[in-house]
Image (cartoon, rainbow, N blue to C red; front, side, top):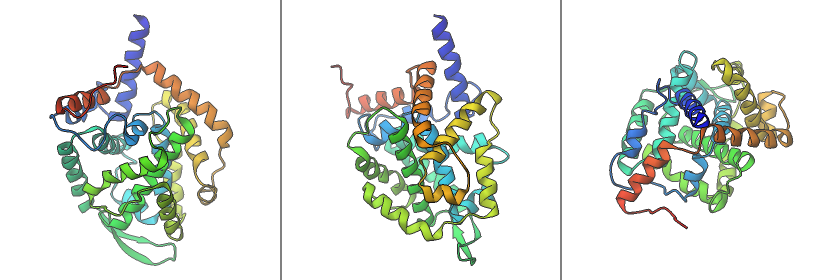
Length: 304
């Protein structure tokens, strides 16, 4: 009984941190639960498995580091984001899109994509390219959307491969191919469909990446994100774990010395498994999504 109360308390604190809700109840839970129609994925699909895992905590930090290397996506964050004043608010907005798109119904995904697209319509400006030229940008531009998508996708994939014990159904190719569906409602229809295509697309962006004073400032902020004191030691390890999985050339651009992957892999994997144990196995989001899929008649739990 005491252990159950401790798990409930830790779970509430953890979800409060990620969702921003004072009660630790994600405001997008009803969105995932509502209706009786399927969504993009089933519980056995690769994106569901990857995004339900605690390795996403590392993947999210890694994605931010990668996105900061492109001056276009960096400009969108620096010029239009409230990340410095309300970091957890921006985090919860990203988590909402990820959660609804992974676990929600087709209607929920359509509505969430509409919300994101309306936000993108307001984000535009100018930035300096790697060649020193000024160019205009729009957050809805397919080229920038592609960079954000592949940085996100590759980060969650590598984080899972290095820090999770759960195998990805169908492997990396399945994850890349299925998660490409997530950005179609955002207007991006040319996302990579395999791991080799993902790596080739990343190579195509190399000449556009640059580290400026603003890049270093944002990365420094990511490294020292203003979190509650008790969360800071854990976050410091997660940051090092994200840095360790970046390709050597990206780490060289960032210019931060970090822990080696051979060290972060066992330590972080153990930490994430302990966090899962401490918080408990319950996942209200997954439970709500599974219940909706059962009502829709497209999935039944395996009782064997």
